[in-house]
Image 1 (spheres, rainbow, N blue to C red):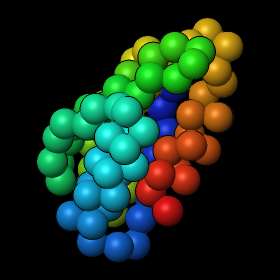
Image 2 (tube, rainbow, N blue to C red; image 1 turned 30 degrees about the horizontal axis):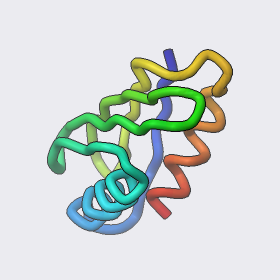
Image 3 (tube, rainbow, N blue to C red; image 1 turned 180 degrees about the vertical axis):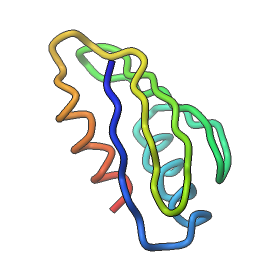
Image 4 (cartoon, one colour; image 1 turned 90 degrees about the vertical axis):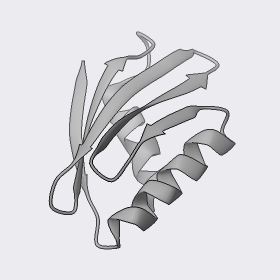
Length: 84
């Protein structure tokens, strides 16, 4: 459905902690570790579900479910904000 990568410079443990806090504080759920995991975020337009893997300071994100009217670019932008 959607697939993109986000590079990061900080420690992987920090990135995971920031992502988990941002997603769960927005009412979503986050499972996983420094290698791989998944997340769910509910929006007023519907649910967004995805998985991630981490390889060499890069998070590879695969969105497996999203609302029809939410573009992949908007999901990517929001996830980049969560990780910044």
